[in-house]
Length: 119
Image (tube, rainbow, N blue to C red; front, side, top):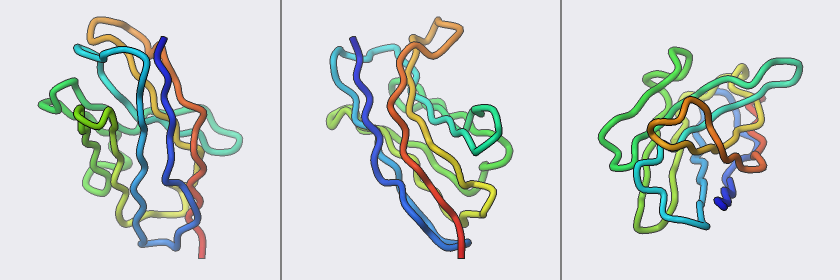
């Protein structure tokens, strides 16, 4: 079983920055992709970013490309999402998730952390 725990959410003004963390435990996640998703009120959950096990491959939604950076520190069993130039439309609950490299869907999810961008 895999446990994922997000942290780092909060209230920030437009143009500001936040860094989300996701600590994972329960098994070695070799060959697992780690991802961030978000869900705004009244909207479906959407993909934000993902990173391969060794960090060599990263993927971003067009809406966050150039503003968000995903990274991972396997020694600390943690992935990060650095969010810069935040906009009100980035307001959402952000979820960390993971899946095997060959899996079609994400198998494990965290409980989420709220990010609110507002003046």
